[in-house]
Amino acid sequence: MKKKAVMIFLAVLLLAVLVIVVIPEKYEIGDISKDGEITILDLLIIQKHVLGLEEIPNKDLQLADFNGDGYVNEKDVEALQNYLLGIK
Image 1 (cartoon, rainbow, N blue to C red):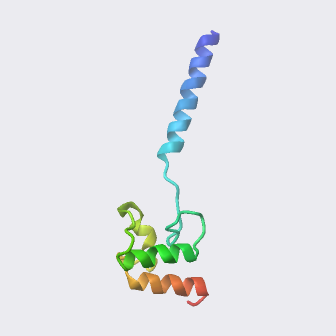
Image 2: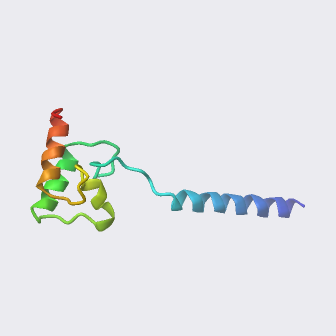
Image 3: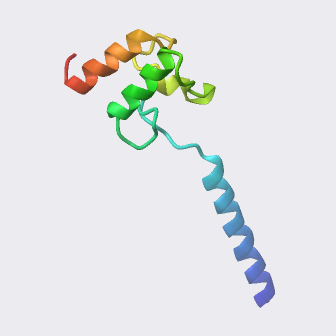
């Protein structure tokens, strides 16, 4: 009986761990550094990407599309700068 209870507990624990691993974290658009805040670091990462100095992985491009037009370009850099400065 005890062995069965331990096996059930371990199965439930394993399932819980798998669920935690599978559920992706949600990040705010613009938080390309995924630190929970939109900061100058995010702006620098997007600027480097736009200038061709640093590639943003495809899976993260939607986070860098700050103005939501489907592209990561200088318009996103400008929109994020304005956001950080409190403009617009």
